[in-house]
Amino acid sequence: MKEDFVTLETAYLLKEKGMSIDIRFPTKYIAQKWLRETKNLHVEISYMYGNYWIYDILTIPKHDMVGLSDRPLIHYITYEEALEAGIQEALKLVKE
Image 1: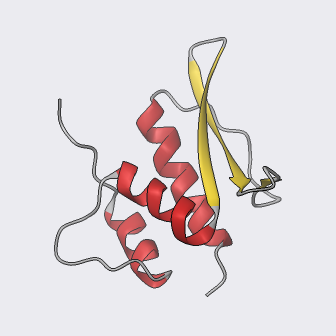
Image 2: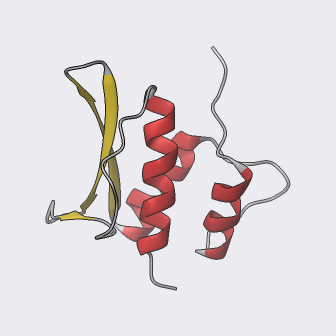
């Protein structure tokens, strides 16, 4: 099993929002965990009937659903694609 690292675009956003990144990119899991622990945002991935994945962004601890108001509902083919997109959107919501 291979580790899934964030894309270059996501790595730039993570660094911009305060994550300490050296030369290596973090995994999607580490980015998701960092958002939970430092920004109180949880990226939740759901499998949907029809064989696709979606994401939601929830606040911690209130469990309020948040997100960009103009986000279209996109059906992702893989869990990892949905997670990457969710991480990117969550990062766009983080205030500097």
